[in-house]
Length: 452
Image (cartoon, rainbow, N blue to C red; front, side, top):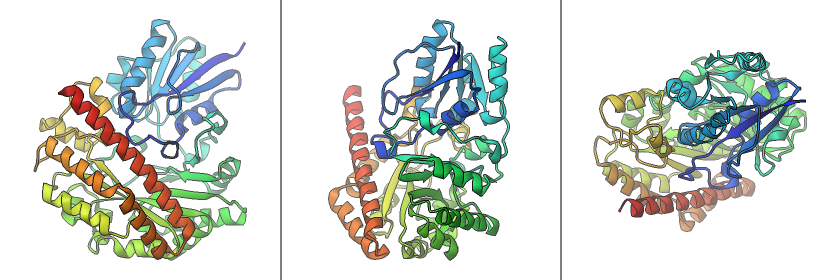
């Protein structure tokens, strides 16, 4: 009789955060990889709280992944199984950053990339010798199997692909370098293309932190990938994340567009050079001098929309500078704007700095991890109170996310890209963000009334 492995993707039970609508949710790719690495003599099921709340199911072994904002929920679920004597394992970025905390709530903690040690974990479990901690190493991307996409919930709108890991940028607020290393590792093109062809989805998302990478070799690889999609006749619309250097190479843009790229997400963070320098975002400095206009214009030339991510609450920010940022975002040629609050996540230099300076608004962990979802003020800014920053963020949301502004952006995107399809993609993305922001502001209002 097959043993049962239950894999669980918990969600923050207190707040919606940035995952309100189906188009804003991504399947738990890590769980799909773990499922693919598990021997065939196991029965595997994924319970995904993006679509339905967890209800207890019997299992021989339970594996859970969690981001920081969903860590408390992971601990709650694990408790049910531990009380029944069923072994529990936690992996993912939060467990890797805070393994000592995670060990208080789970039988076993996997630190780092699980691909290198999951076969050992399963073998140890079958021998009755499961360890309390496993340390994974960074792995060659080519040994990672195609995830079990068939186990993901069918309502996910986007198929997801990861073609690379690691980042040499090491920004102060980001934990990617600590989790995946500072070397850029990439999958072979044919393996990526095979996986893309295996997906039934019309829309796909490359969830690499930076699909393009850095330097000429990375540009050549990206061009090879996009040409491969064209040559194989893969007709899918897609988006990706990249740095501002996505705009530097005309061939990259040409073949990205021809292979189906409709949107690129770029972490622009701030239009202010001083702010970018303060958070070690060096790659953006040159482009920010003309307020990113040249880079965006080059991307628009190839009928690709730009989603610009901006942070509110940097140590260099003042109430006046944030109001200017909002005004800049309304007038800028950026097609879709995503604003988040500076959030010190565990494992980052930013978190350590704020903790040492006693600037964390919340510090009753693990209960308070629910607040660390990028939509709530979690630290004390240098130039204003937390309450003032929250007020300014709400004002900004009302100005940036309303139907009049969204329609104006649609018209600008249509004019700038000369593509109705791209303008429609950007318009739908903006409507999605409008719904998310409305929900966030409503949750904020409910939270304030409860505290009152």
